[in-house]
Image (cartoon, rainbow, N blue to C red; front, side):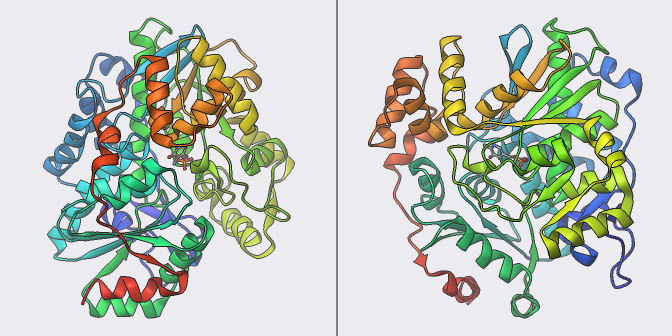
Length: 490
Ligand SMILES: *Cc1c(COP(=O)(O)O)cnc(C)c1O
């Protein structure tokens, strides 16, 4: 399978590239991104044939349908990273909360958030490709909390890849900060920025777009890649768990094979939702994909009105920070798939230049045939956390946004698969507030109090963080980022 560009080809780059090339250099002509030229069709038999198969076997066969140019033994090594999840026999448990609401828990990996689902295997694949080509890559990430720890964990001591992770000092939870600053891998660098997430992100984007910076890196025998969800190498691993979750519902007797379900996704950069969309296009019986947002509800407006409008909007800080995003990068892949290259280039140019675009009535109708959307305020989210806890289910604030979409977006009495993207341990202060009405002073107290109240263990990966030495102590101004990164290569 080959990959082509969402905004068309500029004549400088190849018009179509392989999967491994799309992983190594994910940026394409005119600021676009790569998409698979076509998607595999799983056919009716695929689901039946995989009804009783292990997650890794399902994954192997699904990936094979994409015909990636990756050696089978590398795919096996990549999928072996799921063996380190809580239950190697089932890395993604699907839990019944109500008759019509099942939660697919995507957070049972090493950093306790859903980013592990794709980044764990992705790290193996990227490092292997770099070694085979004798190339060295730098991955830069700006993080408000989940991508950073997951990227650091997956690349720790992997050959031919270095990671620099920028985070806003004071802008993450204790757990998230400790997950990064206690990382001692020799190829990992964590840099605190005096400023907010936007400062970290802007510093990163400036460097990513700088030809001069690329040249300086090249002199140091290093190329730039990306580990965010514009990289298709992440998206491909995010189609698998949608198929798995569906099959789990069949196995649990909740649905018959072929029956349609809703997929309900807490969305930021739309990578998780895009994985669901691809699974649906490949033949998974999905009625609609529900897009849950927080107060940064640009996606809700887009799906309700066809207008994607960034004017008069600034990011609002919420208690579901991984979804505090306005420019949702994978929406572009949906535009391309529904409306084609020319239209995507025109719409994305309008967004870049005028900060808004509007779909036509016909286009909006198509979009609404696939997606429904709603957003959830922090106060509503807390009420959902409290209510679910009373029903016996402990969830994090990102997952809670889906409970609003569950209540408002379904027009048929079908089962709803809610995707849970973070373990409660990553957002314990908000959960403590939801359950008790009070914000605990210390995050460690919140963890202990919830564990006690819920009768749950704090996983060792989280509990142990507070005793680990802080080894990453760099704290700089945003203007110093470039020099700091280049100094790593001296
Ligand atoms: C990244 C993330 C999301 C958003 O996922 P997208 O694929 O970017 O839409 C939601 N919740 C958590 C906890 C995350 O880490």
